[in-house]
Length: 162
Image (spheres, rainbow, N blue to C red):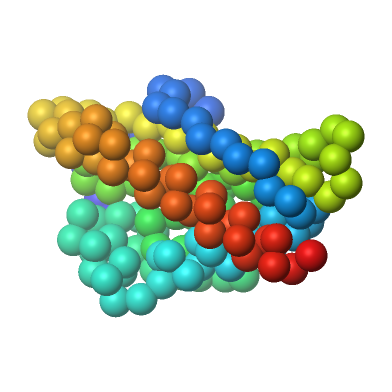
């Protein structure tokens, strides 16, 4: 991908905060971690996801490595940091945005095998096309809907493993 399309911040941690969604999952952090791996691989796999990734010139476009190992990738996301079973930082970029999706897993005190799963989004949307993309994806609530669905799917997969 042409790196000049989207300016790169000094560090991904410097990306502006967009939102955070959370839910308590009735499963251990290890089961939730495995659930994230399964769900994210599933939702980014296939011709539709990869066609979309190509159309907006995502980096990365397709899966490489053993996701969610650090350095591996799925369509639209590369694992920038992996600290199982506590934190998974996914990063990517395309012609309208540079972004990060951070999953954080915290054991719930006082509950046996319960985990608070949080998904934090950080992103920058440069230029007029970036602002238009943000309007279409973030402002409409489409992004929030998609993230909440991912969290629900992770919970379902992790709770089934118990």
